[in-house]
Length: 50
Image (cartoon, rainbow, N blue to C red; front, side):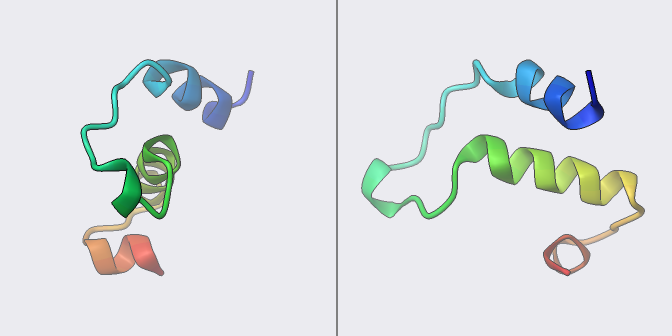
C-alpha cells in the first residue's frame, strides 16, 4: 500500500464539521495534500498552496 492510500485509510473516518453548501474540496483531499506538502518541506500555507 502506498503512502497516500495509508493516509486516506487513516483519515477516512473523520467527520467533516464544515457546512455542506460551503465546501469546495473534500476534507480528506485537503488533509492528504497538506501532509504530503509538509513531508516535502512546506513550512506555510503558501508553500502548501504552491
